[in-house]
Image (cartoon, rainbow, N blue to C red; front, side):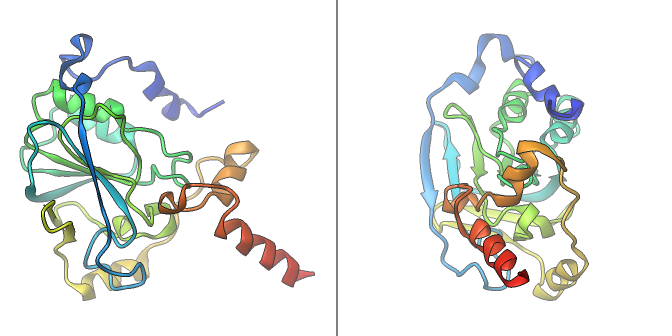
Length: 232
């Protein structure tokens, strides 16, 4: 059974004041995907060295710049939205919700619905290593890889950092000096797993990056088998 804080999202049937009538969440969205212009092992000036999915509704914005609002769980972000602690121009960063960190890459529907309900959907952007539903409204970027739990650049973002999203340039930039990012990376350590036993722990230990399909028969399994062979 999932821990209580993980079950909360399934108990919420809607987010924000307009949740009952569906609101913008029910609208069909257009999708676009962005390919990286840099290799995954390049310095992390750009916040998306792997792959991401961009999703926006019919009133699509092509450019957004603002301060990062960083949350390490979807639930923490949801509470901030409902308590009206999110401001216009903010770039909401929800991390540690990817295939490994979640684990399982749950969709961020509660947060996006709450943003729409609070009337903020057209004024903020959202960036996550989690995923969205097909009806998500607003400037949302998901499937960011490498995810935070694997030390991707999204793990280095701090509150107030300036983030620039330029859809036409296929760019997602974290405007922080390289030396500062290097110092943050030196301090970063992986978080404790949310599950230490059971099938979810096994899944998190083996699942690959979202950019590689989030499969459990990929390179992470191969690495573990190779390590086990060498240990014999």
